[in-house]
Image (cartoon, rainbow, N blue to C red; front, side, top):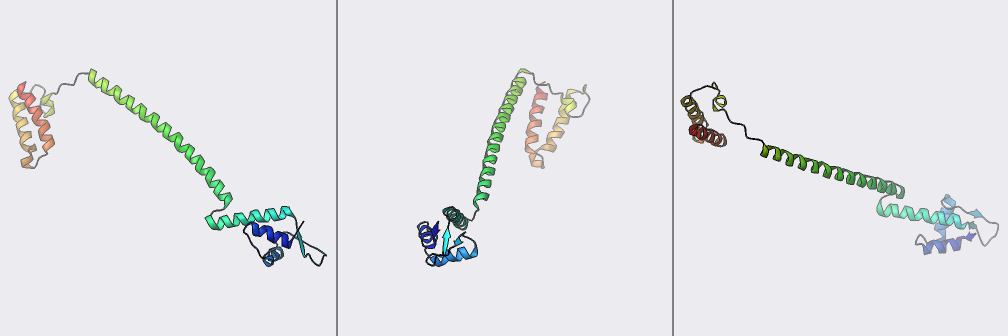
Length: 173
């Protein structure tokens, strides 16, 4: 059992207080457990376990004020953050696997396109004509389309180039 002077000395060593009046105030407020004695020189006796619990409580309270976080809340948040980090790592590995699958599929498609022959273009059907349309009629329709698509007449430059290439291919056939 410790008296008020000894308790004040121990609390001072912990940086909590050096005032006996403050210790007595905490006893009277019920924050620090103590027993009243019949000895005139010693007013209160405090158990070391009660003092240790009080010191720990004061340290937690000081840290709460200093950092703005309760220890129990911090521990809960830390565990949640750890769980989220684990989930993120799991998602990253799943994402890497999916990326590898996509790369493999792209390679397979490129290989398939390289093997297959390009489809022949049917110019009359491209222009909306019968499949048996005359070659001169096809050229005439291409010229009309190229005239409408020409950039100088407000047409689209990219479309004009594409259809001009088709026109050149149709002329050579």
